[in-house]
Length: 264
Image 1: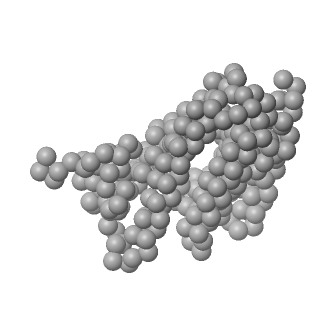
Image 2: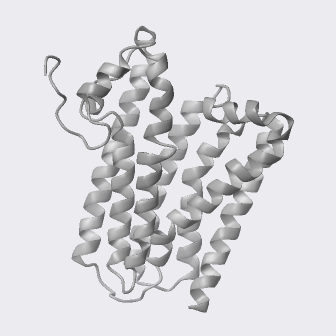
């Protein structure tokens, strides 16, 4: 148990230090959007620190650390590319305007340190899942978790790529993206993200007394469905894209399904 708390402490210190560095850089650039790029990297950092500090079944350690790295690096690269050369994200810009001259210090706690804490808690499954030395073989939960992770990764990657291509075409300016995976879900990337974390949890669940790490996928699911994900995203889109209200009527918000017919 002492070893567990030591590992958790090192990971919390590592992501906090990373976010502090990001905060300092944001003060120089006067743009806190870079925190989005640090999000995925934080999980990669935690995964490999945990790998170096624990002595669990090496195969499961590599599986958890490897899958986290593939997902985290792709997400970080995608968000960095998407935000490159653009102004501050409207979410953060609104907070900056509301906070005035105090935003420099408010952003430390409200943006960077808060995300460090959320990141660390969400990562509990990939931390605890690497500790156990038994079972020293892959179980059906490991395989099921990998399959669900893979489906989620494909969903998230393809939907991000489809949206990027859509936005890159100037002819689509002001239009609603309702093609490809976006024809079956208004947020297929969020759906994929949730599957990724439920998959990682199932891998962790193959180890003893790890049921409580369900907190990881539960938090990410709640954040995307009820907090800063779908609600915050759609709050502004409805006002800026006239066709989005119709898109809402015919397309499921999260779980992919066939769209309703126009005359239904």
